[in-house]
Figure 1: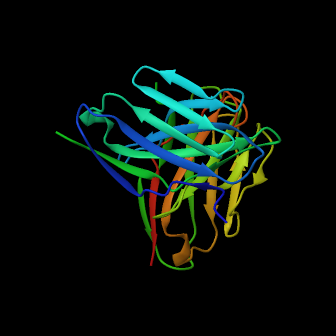
Figure 2: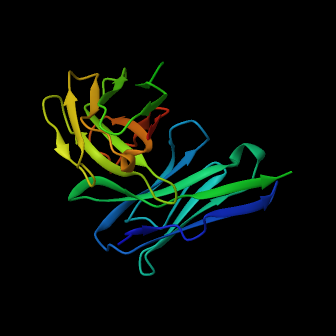
Length: 112
Length: 115
């Protein structure tokens, strides 16, 4: 049973436009959510996070939105750049258990 | 800064062979983790070490053992490799915990093939 789901295996976006990556979760105990970015042959790198007490967190071109009632979060990248082409993983944790649960990832392709 | 260093980068084993994947971090982090990544799946936790001297099972520990040699090093051992252990293995570390306010720092992975 996948507790964290990224239903789009891939997404293609024109350079300069907005990229929106989605993530759904089923466990209502999750209270902290993270996005990681991964390039080929490298390990994931931390991108941005959000606590369940917030509904939005922004860092430069990256914004994460959290909708607790829908158990849904999204990552917005504006404007999209070629270097954003990577696999993006959503991950979640519960305060009572610090182990992260990961989604399967979405491959983002930025077209020139 | 090297961050998290994993060796080897690639390995091919025959079924039944054993090997140890090495991991070292130079960030003075307390917690270290071993994950595996398989196609179409998220990262799955194999074992973790919350602090030096402790290790605990994660989601998929069967077929693996770990050793937290010191604060810097955390190794993963396959005693008798099976084709189902073909995967990419990632080591990670964090200051404390893997949730709130302590993002994981990952190595670049070990790609293991068991034939």
